[in-house]
Length: 334
Ligand code: UDP
Ligand code: MG
Image (cartoon, rainbow, N blue to C red; front, side, top):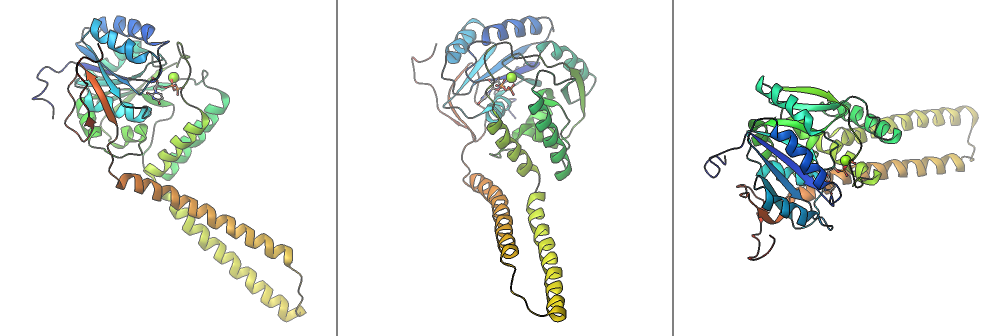
């Protein structure tokens, strides 16, 4: 697609989303370049500054000035990791693309294994965490519940304990670029597109420096995006629960009728009546909430807003997509 504008594709594109990563970027580039230097392939490092408010922007600009293979995309604000990753895949030119976290939790040394398997003919090589011992018990359990639930209610099987860390062939990246949905869950899309996939195991280390940008509220919303993005089963559950309650009500009605015929009319029942009314009210609100989750997402898709706004770029051509790219003002950003 971009073959005319970029006649010389590098073998490998590394895509790095960075949001307030000033503490770790220096160590990151040092280690990454040592690894890449030993691989014997041509490469580019596409960095997305996701609206950082610390010195991330300056560090990236300086890195580009020192090594033009480091390319920089500055977002106009913080759009979140999924969209930063999306932009990286849109912009990256390599024959193979590897997204990496800036905090070195995705050890770059693994890329050698990725490349070996890629050359053997696999289109996607993803990394699987052997043990999640660097995650808290809570994060491990909730992640476990989420993946088994998602596997049950949708037809995408997301490999367990795999993150965004993977190598993707150009063909896969071109396929992913076709997805312009707003509420995205990249791991789901990675599985959805298919192709020949394989995995390598690794042990996920702790963050090299700085702090995690995710909390449980963000992860919960992320999980909702995951479920609603790949399944309409929750909507169906709403319908079935309506049927179940109607059936129970019919049985209960029949029982009351029989009881009245056999032992006459009596009036007590205020408590049970209240419980039933409140319970049904609750069920109806939950069902409305589920519908609302989908409706809200339809609304945001229907607006057709751009996925992200690029404020300026360094050393890389904007891809031919719906992304709005605002050119840098002259004399700005060195
Ligand atoms: N990140 C981002 N935008 C955000 C939050 C995070 O680009 O709004 C990047 C962050 O800089 C890092 C990667 O996403 O490179 C993973 O984030 P983090 O390490 O905080 O997540 P965790 O590993 O704790 O899940
Ligand atoms: Mg991390």
